[in-house]
Amino acid sequence: MSDDDLRAIIRELFLGGDASIPLSSDLDLVAAGVCDSFALLELAMAVEARLGCAPIPDSDVTVENFAAIERIQAYLANREG
Amino acid sequence: MAGLGQIIHGRLAERPERIAVRFVSDSGVQTLTAGALAGMAYDAASRLKALNLPARSVVGVAHYSGPALHAAWLGCLWAAHIPAMVAPPSPRMEAAKYAVGLNVVVGGLGLAALLTDAQAAQALEGRLTSPPPFIACDDLSADAAPVEVADLDETEVAVIQHSSGTTGNQKAVALTTAQVIAHQTAYGERLGLTPEDRIVSWLPLYHDMGFVAAFLQPLIAGIELVEMSAFAWAARPAMLLEAIDAWKPTLCWMPNFAFSLLAEPRVLRALGSVDLSSVRAWVNCSEPVMATSIDRFCAALGPHGVRAEAITVSYAMAENVFAVTQSRPGAAVRLTADRARMEVEGIIAPPGAGAVVELVSNGPVLPTTQLAVRGPDGETLGEGRVGEFCLRGAHRFAGYNGRPDLTAQVVDDAGWYATGDLGFVQDGEVYVTGRKKDLIILRGRNYRAQDIEAAIGEVAGVKAGRVVAFSRPDEAAGTEKLIVVAELEPPAQAGPLALEIRKCVAQTFDTTVGDVLIAPDRWIVKSTSGKLARADNLAKYLQNRGN
Image (cartoon, rainbow over the protein chains, first blue to last red):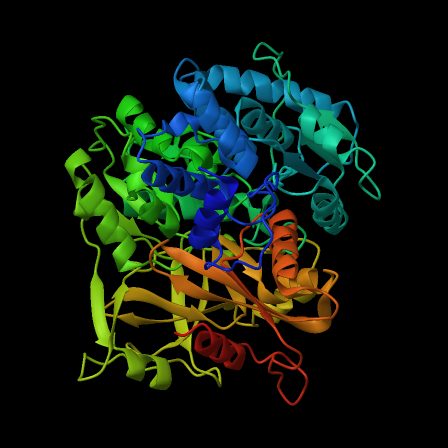
């Protein structure tokens, strides 16, 4: 999954699909007010659905693992490895 | 009657070995006996006494949840001071912005000291204009030597709790022992509270719902509390359900959004075979109650033992200590009415040919409170007529601390407090339909629209004075959705500006904007007097977004 795929998911879920809002890969989505920490589980489920992968354990859905595009990528890479 | 400090002291001394609080976290459970809580509170009281503050000073308590928070508050009461819970810095908020609000609290209350933990003290270092002495309470000892517990008259102000709102804009509600006890007695009777009851809560203690229902109530009634931090719960909402399964509590208070959230697949998917049947009353409180949220909650968690008759509703506010109403367990009443007649004429009529509105009753008024529904000219309205709720009675607050001017704005000569909430009474059941003030309630927390607008007005790229904030019910989330419309000042770009506005709201108010509309010059409607016309702007916004 590319950064742009994740960007599209985040825009769709939280930003009404608005493509003009810049989402850098290191942007902290919670600190930037794109979503709140409650919504990270929703994001994790959307990522699972897109990847068709096994469920991500709730305990992994933390700000450290899911609150930025680059953190999600690192988490997914780690998980595969 | 003894003072509140002595009443609680006596309660804890009855059975020092009983568990007063279980603190649940993902790393385990920490138990605090009544005796250990008293010991830690003695320690906090001794530390405060060493400062030699004048008696009856107002002292702030800004701790994350945990034994130290409970003991620090109690120690303050026992040291003959007036404790006030203050929100600790949230991880998401900028320390500088948090300090702006705290400065107002410190000055407004004339805080003589702040009991806090080392981490929060460090975050605040150098940020307060006239910092009171900080007392770190991370390391209170359960074996501290007893101190003499100060007594006070039941008619003296015993505690201060903040009205709901953002730090710095809340009002400091002063309560006497007599008011706190009158409320607990009436509320406990309505709930049928017994010593076997046990409360579970993730609510923060600096809001009235958490402070009264999940802190004062178990202390005064001598019943056990199962507590988790609001931050930990937000990160993993299912931990509440697991704690219920493990510790079998009987009572649980939550704002409406939590009922929706706990019914979502993302929360439920990893849930094992938890048993929630021990909870005999779930209390939905602090934000508008939605029938859809309750229905989803019951449908999703029914298989786990949640019974529809266990869902109750309360209408509450800090100015009445807490509850104005509370429905009786087993009797949640609903009413379907003609929407247009309610919204346009303020009359509750049976459904006609047009759209209907389904309302959930907040239950009958407590016997200690009188509720009047007033029309625009102050006239008292009868059943089935929408007006402003005004109340008085045995536990209406003593006043806003040190601000008789503010008190006089809302309490009339006959003792009626005008709540600003709109609603009606039908067959003795109280229904809340809206509010007079431009108040936005997000996940049980109140925000004034003008505060949000003022903060966004400072964002570079937003045209001065050209911001409007309002909210819409969000049925899916079971709360309201914050909407911001701002006019752009070139050369700012719409997308980056929308992100800056989101950042500003997150860092200033610790909440999330649902939608930002960046509008062109002169989009926002103002009234002839130059005031924002929120209803007109909302209509224009809905049209723009295709609703």
